[in-house]
Length: 203
Image 1 (cartoon, rainbow, N blue to C red):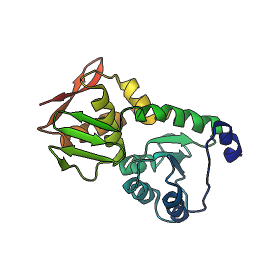
Image 2 (cartoon, rainbow, N blue to C red):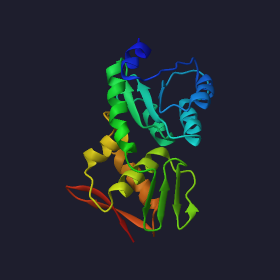
Image 3 (tube, one colour):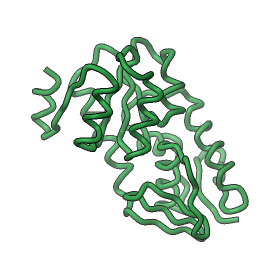
């Protein structure tokens, strides 16, 4: 049903029986998005998300049985992008994918002071030195801020860019900002303007 309905928007869907089969399929097709169920057999969902993120930057949607389910934090920490509750429809999935596309409207290569971001290579460099093991959401957050720097982006706008229509915990954005701020320490500042939002500035 999901496969047939999403085909109306020219979205090709492949289904697999386990996370191990999912890794094989991911290697074959390098999909733009992945939907992972918390009860999928094979390797743990968090490990699956970390594995696919090493080889690309897919939009990872976690399937939950209830809001902020037990796997939500684990999957977000691993590089998950958004969550969707069961039962969900093709329209729900399409809404998330449409919202997520805006996060990738920025140019593939961005430069801001000593920061260099290459979306195709999934890399960020500071003065030519690459930052390793940058989680997907922090990468997308930095890309969004760099693309619009020094403009101030409000919380809602950033959430739309990173998670589309997905519902996220109110602290999730603040957590990612804090982690990215720590990585950029001494190079760039993520400024919080109370009542307005966030902006990227050089130290």
